[in-house]
Image (tube, rainbow, N blue to C red; front, top):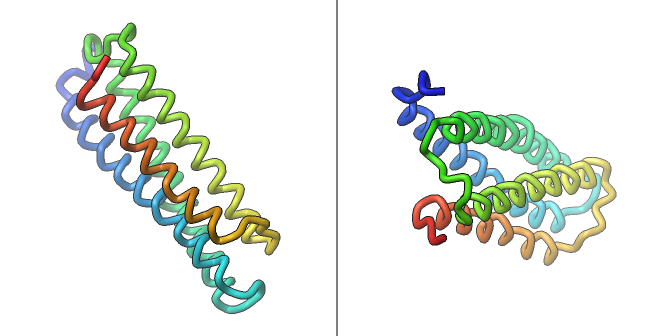
Length: 148
């Protein structure tokens, strides 16, 4: 994989941009769910939220997540960039898979709203909105500080 060496900074730039876009969606979608809980089922506002939630998940979050993994994977393949025996790498990876799980949960919650069968109260989504923040903090600390 040494052929990718000269491209490392490009991979890193696109990885960071992809992660920013993905995280923006992860922060915003649960907030849309909070607002969606406040409107009547079947109302024009509810239908507008359904469209917004679908487009955010399908056209921003999903491509951003995929490109985050693509460019992160390319970076991980560069020889010597990661010490595979370090705890920081595995902690970061676990947090990233936590973000993927949260992304999947958001997709499930969006389907429930789309089918007018949401069972969670507004407070649930307010609390869920904090999960990606905590996971993102872990990822950033692991990759920048590399504490162990």
